[in-house]
Image (cartoon, rainbow, N blue to C red; front, side, top):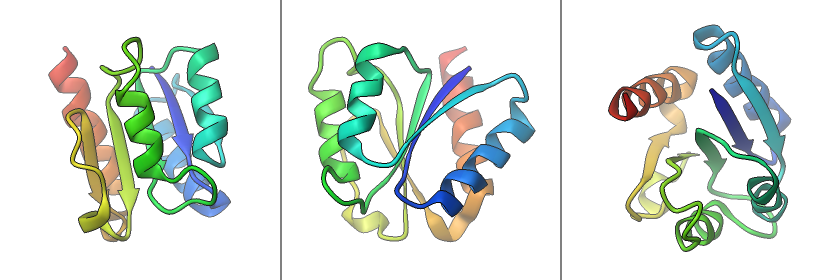
Length: 119
C-alpha cells in the first residue's frame, strides 16, 4: 500500500503515519504540506489512498480533492479529508470525511473500510 498524506501540521502527519504503520507496517507513506505540492506528487507517483487536511494555506483540501477528482487518470483514487470541520468538506464521489474528533482511530477504520471495498 502507498499513501499520500497532505497536511500542514507535522503533529497531525506524524499521528497519521503512526496509525498507518501500526496497521500496515510495509506501507510506503509520502508527505506533503499543501495541495499544490501534493498534486505534483500525484503526477509523479501512484498512490492507493490519499489523506488530506481541509484547512491549509494555498490549495486547501476541498480544492485539492476537486482537482484530483477532475483528472481522468486520478479520479478513482479514494480521498479521506481529515478535518475538524466535516460540514465544510467536499461531497464529491470518492471523497470520504473523517472528523478529527475521531482521531487516528477514525482514519484507521475508514482506511480499512475503503481497502475492504477494493478487495
